[in-house]
Every structure is written in structure tokens, then in C-alpha cells.
Length: 332
Ligand code: NAD
Image (cartoon, rainbow, N blue to C red):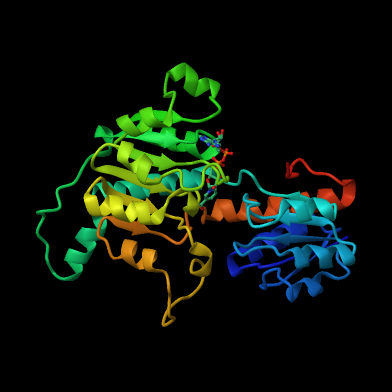
């Protein structure tokens, strides 16, 4: 049995090695290249491929894999938004993902960034670098005084809620599906409008669908409290970036922590030093002392990377051996 793993980074290599030792009957080859129209030819002769990339999986990639007799594709990440479901179904591909690799990694990061916003660390850091060690005027806010509106109470949202409760914050939540435990605690509000009206912090933990794209737009910001803080460690297009810029300009939004951006694939996880970067919204947001941008790093912990590598290889092995996996993605 032969598996080709694309886009393997240095930090993933030790976990690939460990998995190979645990599964000596499987031959795993690795490449640091991403899977695209050119590199797909490397997969000839393999039984399955393991992948992780933000850039799109093109229809040509699937056509070529099909022509090589390969129909087992295992993602090391969650999101399947960069592949065309019609193409996947047309050629009879079986795709697995790693739906849960470490919710705490993302939840902890989003809380950390909110704390940085509340304590104005970016401003203090810049002042400190200039040798200005005065406190004022950067008076901060306390997390225990916030009403945190958590949108999406799945794996990540639930861990975030536990952390916020630990800090003594008031938590309210909105989800189309109500988790029974949280329901018992009375955390849910009935509508997004109610959450917007009450929350001093709005944090997103829902997937990107056509129906959730730009859910935080001008109309949504207008319904929020003045001076609200926004946290997005979910997916960039959930927020209309121009509307956020306008809401920051007007003071409606007091600060934003963004681990994801609308157009992030062309910049995040690339070394852009010395390169021309045409992304006006990024430059606008990044220039602000009350906006923290991180390059989609919320997931990036040792535990998460280990789980992404090992769970995806095991899922690919299951597909090859049995034709199915408990991590099979259902494309509706
Ligand atoms: P999950 O599937 O466990 O939970 C998502 C929740 O969103 C579910 O409870 C679902 O009912 C709810 N939901 C779906 N549509 C909704 C809507 N329109 N309105 C309200 N609620 C809705 O997912 P998760 O593991 O908690 O991950 C959440 C998101 O975090 C992922 O979709 C992904 O976009 C993002 N993510 C980001 C990173 C990162 O590094 N920044 C890493 C992993 C995941």
C-alpha cells in the first residue's frame, strides 16, 4: 500500500515518521509540493494521497487522479471549501478530513487575541519600542466585565465558552443547533439580532457557507453595541472587510482580532518579505493599533499538527483497505 503526502512541512515530518513506524505495512512518500495541475503526476502508482492546502484543488487535479486510478484523498485539515463537490462526485472520489484535531488550539488562540485587544498590547508594544513607558492613555478593559457573544457552539465554540466562563465573563451564544448542555445553562439567545444587541464581544466559530458569507456586514455591525470587539478565527469571508473598516472608522467597532482574512490565500503562509503585496484592506486593517492580524495560526500547535498528520494518514489507509472511513466527507 502506497500513500503520497503532499505539502508536508518540516514540522510535520516527525509525525509522518512516527505514523510509519506504527504502520510498517504502509509505504508513505512525502513531498513539500502542493497538489496542483503540475504536481499531480507525482501521484501515479500510489493508492491514495494526503493533502493540506489553502489553494484550490482544481478540476484538472481530480481528472488526472481519476485517470491514474486514484480515488482516495485525505485532507489533513477540516475545510473542503477549496474543492468542487460536483467534480468530487463526478469521478467517485472518497474524501476524508480531520474534523476535530484540537479545538483547544483555536479556542485558546481566539481568547488570547481578545485579551490582547482588551489590554491594548499592540499599542503598548509600539510605545515600548519607542522608549515610551507611560501608561496613559491606553487604559484597558477587563475580560470578566465583558458579555461575550459566541456565534457557533460546535467543538471550538464550546471550548472557548468554557475558557470565557473561567475568566468570569458573561457568555451568550447563538447557533442554529442547540447543544443540550449549553441549553440547560441558558446560554442561547434566539436570534443573531439579540446577540448583537447584548454582546460587547462577538466571536465567530461557525463554518463558511454561501449563507454565512459576509454575515458580519454593515447591517450586522449597525445592530451591535458601540465599542464592540470582533474576533474571527473561523473563516475570512464571514466578515465583509470593507464594512469592518467602516465600522472601525466610525468607532462602532473598538477593535478586531482576525486570524483569517477574506483574501488570505495569496499572502498567508507565504514569505512576503520584500514582495509587493496588493491587498488594500489588509494594509488598512494592519495599520490600525486596535486590529490584530495573525496569519491563520490559531490551529498551529504541536498537538494539532500531530493529530492532523496521523489522523489523515490513518483515514487514507482505511479508505484504501476498506473503501470507507469514519472521517468520510459527505458532499450534498
Ligand atoms: P463545528 O462543526 O464543530 O461547529 C460549528 C458550529 O456552527 C455548529 O454547532 C453548527 O451548528 C454551527 N453553525 C453552522 N451554521 C451556522 C449558522 N448559520 N449560524 C449559527 N451557527 C451555525 O466546527 P468547529 O470545529 O467548532 O470549527 C468552527 C470553524 O472554525 C470551522 O468551520 C473553521 O472555519 C474554523 N477553523 C479555524 C481554524 C484556524 O486555524 N483559524 C482552524 C480550524 C477551524
